[in-house]
Amino acid sequence: MLTVNVDLGDRSYPIAIGAGLFGDKAFAEHVDQALLRQGKIVIVTNDVVAPLYLEKAKSFFAGRDCAEVVLADGEANKTLGAVDSIYEFLLSNKYDRHTTLVALGGGVVGDITGFAAATYLRGIDFVQIPTTLLAQVDSSVGGKTGVNHPLGKNMIGAFYQPRCVIADTDVLSTLPSREIKAGLAEVIKYGLIRDPRFFHWLGEHSAQLVNCDPALMAEVIQTCCRVKAEIVTEDERESGVRALLNLGHTFGHAIETAAGYGTWLHGETVAMGTVMAADLSARIGWIDADDARLVRRILEENFGMTVVPPADITIERYLDLMASDKKTEQGKLRFILLKAIGQGAIASDIEPGQLVATLEAGDRLCE
Ligand code: NAD
Ligand code: GLY
Image (cartoon, rainbow, N blue to C red; front, top):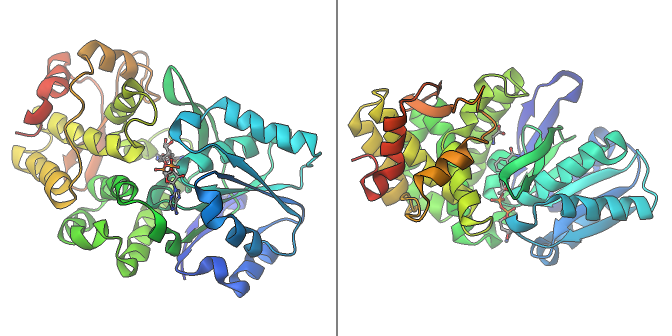
């Protein structure tokens, strides 16, 4: 088992990563004794993950009073309505402040459950058991929780840290390959913003990674979690460096919202947004054209990702959706761009003409 710690004083917590964690009795006992408070457990999951892993999760918490709430699957259900259904269950069954919620699923379940935990009775404990690659490398770590609003992605939420994160890499064996690729877009992000060697290494090992080679995956997850833990420790509430984790997300969130939640996977729009960010970085002279082309080539050719955004989103729609981005300051759009491969930075004061050129580039991105 590999471990990464998120150091946040009395809210610090471990991320455990490895194969077979679910079936490891000694590890389950350690979690029960050392990481959880006494009290009841409610597992929140969805109707795709429940048939696969709910029984395993329940046996992990054997000995505890353990119930479940099963939500409908999908990004389109990442709503206040889903949070309300968790409140309904907890209130009608009189769950008290000693209850621990367990998020068993991908980023959607994790974000919803974390927000329910942050707000039920003004805050109860929660544990993340991420079951997608994207959730294991990103969404389960760092305490961003929340739901979508029809007018914008992740617009309602709270910073609220889990008690621990348990990333059993065996669960990735049932994940569709489209979801693996979506998770890899967030993996590549870490290399691009912080670690050039990791970025180039990912490019060289793309075939094994797309095939979810178990030996490589645990190491990759550990590297991503280590980078994320460092950044979150430095800037938990995103007043500075944490914004770098949003490389590709300003464009990506706009595409995800414009297309309708669930049309494109979150990670797929991050891949498109990352190539748009590389394109804009080259236009403003931060990176040279060769580096921008390299970013596109690795994502598109090595990993087989779609990198050209849908053609039917107008410039006006992009600008309108991006204006609600959480990084916007006093009406000014801010983007996470690249100063080099492995060096993300915040860019404000982008000339409108350069931004529009990126939005209009389509298949000519990074040319
Ligand atoms: P997801 O939660 O929708 O999961 C993807 C699909 O895989 C779903 O259909 C799910 O039911 C299914 N699934 C989950 N685990 C499975 C398994 N082991 N085997 C088979 N199927 C499985 O999507 P995601 O990509 O995990 O997460 C995307 C969400 O995460 C977005 O809402 C995004 O905004 C959010 N996010 C949050 C953060 C954060 O810091 N909180 C960071 C990145 C992304
Ligand atoms: N995924 C972005 C963040 O956690 O800040």
